[in-house]
Image (cartoon, rainbow, N blue to C red; front, side, top):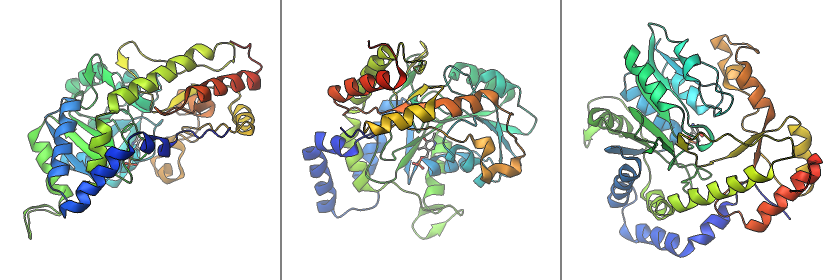
Length: 370
Ligand SMILES: *Cc1c(COP(=O)(O)O)cnc(C)c1O
C-alpha cells in the first residue's frame, strides 16, 4: 500500500462533476480576471469567517504582505510572531522592511505563547502576528488583551485554519485582519495559488484592494504604487464548490484525528493537544515523536509517508541570520521542531488506510496492539 500525506486527486474525484462544471462555466463566460465568480466567493468567505470584508489576492503570502502594507507597517517596525511556522509568516514582515521579533511557543498547542510575546513588546512594536498552526487557533483572547493594552494591531496568519473556531468564533473574525491561503494542500485548496484577506475594517479592506490592483481605482489612473495580486475566477469558481464542503471535510479530519488520538496509546508518540477553547481543523496531524527519524524511515518501508513540519525553526533559517538569533534562543520551539512527525490526514483518507497506518505504527514502535 502507498499512502501519501494527502491525496489531492482523491479530493478532485469526490467533486469531479461540480468542479468540471464550474471550470466550464468560467471558460464559457469569457471573464478571466475578476468578475462575478470572484465577487461571489469573497461574499461567501465573509459568511464563513464572520468578518465583513474579504479581498481575494494571488496567494497567502501576498495576503500577509498586503495586510501589513495596508496597515502601514514598514521600515523599522517590529512585529511579534512565532518561529514555529512556515517561512512566509516572517518573510512577509521582512519584505516590508519591518523586523520579525520571535517569541517561543506553548509546548502543548505549538502556537505562539502570549506570555512570551508580551515579554518582547517594545516601543517599536506595531503588531502581533499569531499563527493558527496546523489548524488550531492561537489563544486570541490573550492576544487581543495584549494588543489592546499596547495599542497594537492583531494580524492572524490563518493560512492553515479556515473553518476553525476559537471559543465559538470562526477564525477570520477573531483578529483585526486575517490572512488565508488556498494553496492546494490547505483545508480549502485550489488548483494553483490563491489567498484572501478578511477584516472587519472597511478602510483596511479598501487599502488591501487598492494595493493589490496597482494602486488604481479608476482604470489607468493610479493613486499609489501597488502590485498585481489577484485570485483568478477559475480558482474562485473551484473554491466555491469546495467551500460548500469545508465544514464536512473538516469534520472528517477531526474524526481521523480522534481515531489516531485513541490509537497512539502505547506507541510512545504524543498526539497533538487540542485545546477545549477551540475547534481544531487538523490541517496537519503533527505528533511529537522522540525517535522521529527512525519511525519515519520505518513507516516509509511500509509505503506510508510522514511529514516533518518544520525541520528548521525560523530563527535558525539562513535567510534570517541577520536578525541575530542563535540556537538555544527558543528551546520549546527547537525541541518541538526536532520531534515533529506528521501522519497522513485528509478528508478522503480511507478508513482501511487509517487502520493500516496505526497498525504499522504499533509494529514500528513496538507498541502494544490496541
Ligand atoms: C501556506 C502558508 C502561508 C503561505 O501561503 P501561500 O498561499 O503558499 O503563499 C503562510 N503562512 C502559513 C502558516 C502557511 O501555512
